[in-house]
Image (cartoon, rainbow, N blue to C red; front, side, top):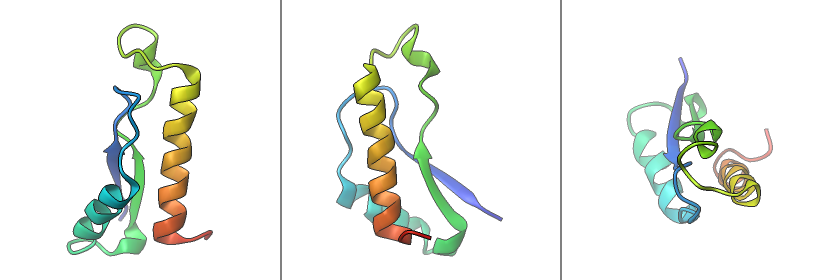
Length: 77
């Protein structure tokens, strides 16, 4: 079984702290093996069309943040 943690908000442009997100991943790893965990945004960016105002550049910054954190936690598997 795998669990994907939606720890990155897609509602606001401000980037989450990498260290804080990593700490939350390791907290979850107390209950589920780290190799069974994944990281994602809380939801997709479709709501940016009619609600959450994020520019395309801000959306890509969120995706890049997920990639950076994943590499720090799980490496380049």
